[in-house]
Length: 317
Image 1 (tube, helix red, strand yellow):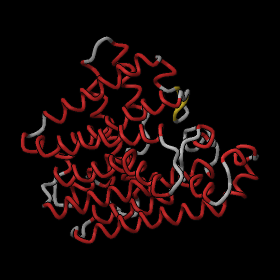
Image 2 (cartoon, rainbow, N blue to C red):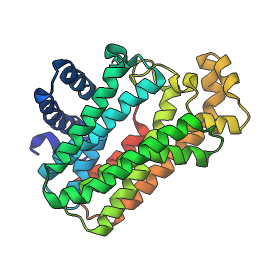
Image 3 (tube, rainbow, N blue to C red):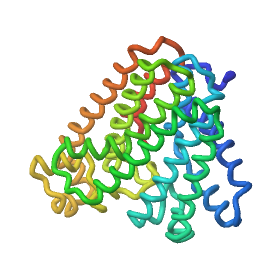
């Protein structure tokens, strides 16, 4: 990959470089779409990227089992299109007007076009996946379909359930968020022709990493500096979305109504012990992810996968 990635410690640079690699391929897909409005929407949606951590996870997993990154590019694009679709649907459900400092697709073009864009992006994902070599397509189709179903289940459960326990929270987070991390790691292993033991290990790694990542997201909703995360401050609390912090807090006797009545400084003081508990659970998931890599041969890619565990629980946005 050249000098851009010559240090396992410089994970931010690895994330940025690989994000750019995936972005260039993603944007090239929209040039053949009509009408131009639909092409514009998809380009806009795919262009509102974060760190592309899922696609980077996929490419690193491929390399960790001895594969060539070139074989991981299309699966990485598929994972990012699934993720992009889920973000549009999240914004529609929440009636969100902004994401990462920009108008959401639904705010800019309306719900109807947002839904059509989701259909188009999933069609592109399927088309790209079926364009890979046949053996790889067959191997990936089932985990891709299973993950899409689990994500939908997680979204529905979050809307319908009153989450009262850490276990209930974990079930939803595993389906809604961790499943896509798990898919990314598994597809990377498949693209790299890893054996079944390696595939299962990376699948578990992705699951634990995804849970740690989601819990850190929950924590950042309370502690992040306004504007840094790209979403409105205390949005999850205001929306009534279950987070591990609020689940722990309510179980300890602090009601959501009481939390909403506090100003930010009072809230952070009251939530301090609960944020700490959530952080400890995130750290535990990160450690489990690390242990999952025990069967993976040592390499620069494996070192970077280990670094992702630290990144997931220490990031500030």
